[in-house]
Image (cartoon, rainbow, N blue to C red; front, side, top):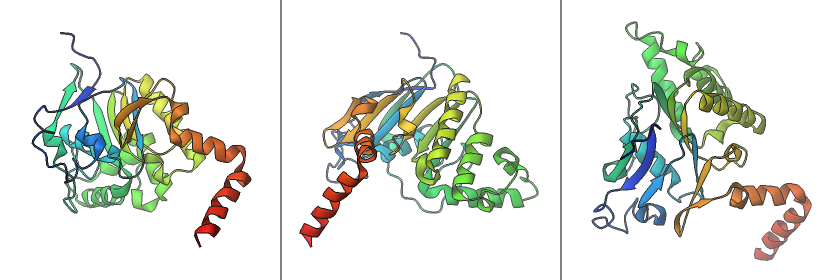
Length: 256
């Protein structure tokens, strides 16, 4: 048996997990989770894409918790809880790891990043733990705009040989800043880092040779970048925005 050198190579739903699950309850009411089976991860960059509520963030969260990260985000050393809302899916996953261990890592989720920033400020205020913000650019994340704090995290806290699990990192980033993030992602990949990213951004998911998994009513399927709905809708809109607007607005007028 060959042991993979990547940090995380595969996610499996334990054989009895689906059979013993209540399919009417979250998260097994989601087709993508219920039919998970085995999901191979790219050694460099893997994307989870799909509509809101399709299960991509749910699976990413479960992976993060399985790897020892706080469900609300942060590094493995950051421990806080504002509200217990994560599912128990992590207990039903089998995560295959390689022989290498990441030197560093981070779980970034856009919806609870404010809570992470607040927790870091509290740690910084304690004389026994002061200095933590030095790894984030030396300034409170609350003292920056949402987009600036995201980039500060990626540019300062992320380092070589890391495992990075990112949930909708584009939420605070302008298109230009998304391009900056892509460049930083590439730099970290060349430094032996691995990324798993749940995203809606056609800019971020354009990273060459990445694997893209689409979550939907038919489960989880590997898909080419140009075949994603995100790419096709964005391309069609930018090619002729007026035509698409006319169709959308006409349909709205008819509904009224």
